[in-house]
Image (cartoon, rainbow, N blue to C red):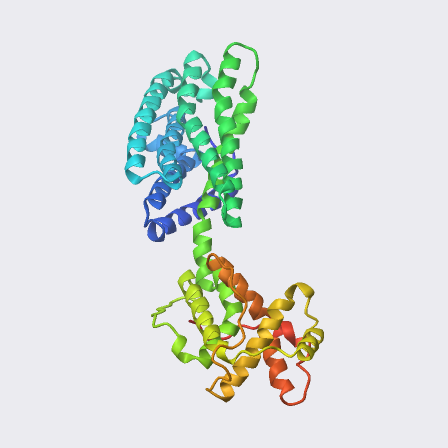
Length: 414
């Protein structure tokens, strides 16, 4: 079928799709999943090009093929694109590469059989230089059955995997959003593909005249479905770009933690881990975030001998002055206790006691929990530091308005 999307709209989108595909082959082809996906997208882009009127006329002029044959060729490439895409779904579902390889061989055989049936069933339409939609006949019904077989398998498997990813415990919100988006797109495609042989059959038995609808829908549906697929394929690129610029969630959490991290390594330089960061970008890796949490915890342990019980009157003054919400008072009290201990450690290396006051027990079960705990402490660390410093000079803690603004981003990084 020839695309009905205006050339002024179609070609810029195809150009962007080509750039995305090139970038994916250059920088996002390190794993079998990425290579299979890139292969599928390559066939999808070829299909989109074959459906453009200018390309069809150019190919017809150079090869002698009529437009009807080229249109059937574009339908054949749609079927071919399903094999690598099904391999992607298989790998994402946890199948081993060997099992996926065996699945690929089976799917390739099914695809070859479908293409052979399409080749035979589409002969009359090709000879008449007619779109397969227009030629009709029982051979046309058979053509659409063969065309739909592999695609319906793909739709079923892909939707099932999207639901698995959406329901997976601990799945990031971004993964769930992409899973829902893909499930919707694949469902729409699956319904359209399933309707093709149904409409062809109903047309042949003269129950429903669907030719006009099918011509209008097919002339643009695939273009927009393929464009949606390319948009989803840009997600890893966008993620890598935001990580490079330091806009990702890991870097943002590190920035918030780094106020406390800098204070701890300034007090205890020996707590720094001998790891080579080797960073060439503004973003922070998960390993660097974990390193920062370990160094903060080491610093807190070394501060323990300097920790003393906070005077209730002083604590009440701090909580009232900073207007600490009731739900955050435990973290604020801990921050005040640590800020006092840090001041005492800076004044003298001899702790007042060997054990010190016990610190709150961590209930973190993973890195995310650990970071969340330390972030709650970090929220009140700058205010506690100011309060301790100014209280020693007989001045109340800093201005309340400065509490949130003081949680800035230091320049150092682990």
